[in-house]
Amino acid sequence: VQPWCQTPSHPHFLAGPQIVLSVYGPDFFGHDVVRGYGAVHVPFVPGRHKRTIAMFVPESSSMLQQFTSWFTGRRPEFTDPKVVAQGEGREVTRVRSQGFVTISFNVM
Image 1 (cartoon, rainbow, N blue to C red):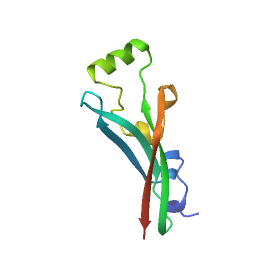
Image 2: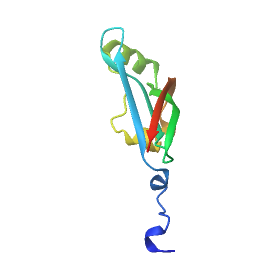
Image 3: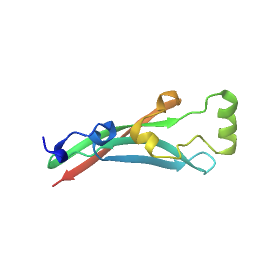
């Protein structure tokens, strides 16, 4: 095996490029809040590809925090898109499913 053909040991390199989505929209008070996060790997094979992305939003961990975030209009958000793409540390984050987004790729 040639040195440039060896498989790297880093697992994120093997996954390939991703598109990370952050969807925002207005709430009841008109504040711009997160509606969902999601990620999908970009296909390498030429052709038309359709992918459905499951979206999720982070939730407050207590009723008091939920009320405070609703009242102030400041809901929990991820500040780093790597959290969505890699998933590391997300197992300890409380999230709620928030629908789906369908994306279409035309790969040449």
